[in-house]
Amino acid sequence: QVQLVESGGGLVQPGGSLRLSCTASGSIRSIYDMNWYRQAPGKQREWVARIDSARSTNYADSVKGRFTISRDNAKNTVYLQMNSLKPEDTAVYYCNAVISSTTYYRRHYWGQGTQVTVSS
Image (cartoon, helix red, strand yellow):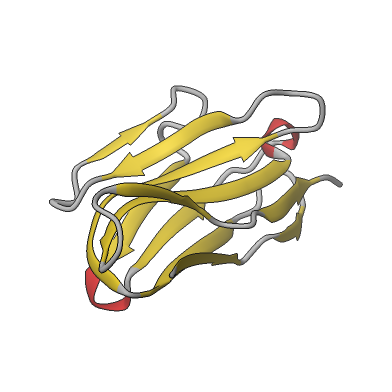
């Protein structure tokens, strides 16, 4: 069984910063791509950022230059540093990872989500 657990969400003023974390646990053999997605009220879930096992990164245009994704392979953890936050960044943020476990090969796993609210 593999689980992803996010943390670090909260309420922040416009222009502020937050750092999200997502840790994978369980019978893990390998972790490949790790992603952050978000879903705002009334909107579809959208992809935010991706980091592969070689630490190559990609970002959605809406967050490029403001958000930074990173990972600590020893801790099975991916981070999302969010700076210069805007009200339109308000959403539930979800972690996603492609993981090979002792049971499955390259399966997608999702965290439960963490709320980020940007408001004055």
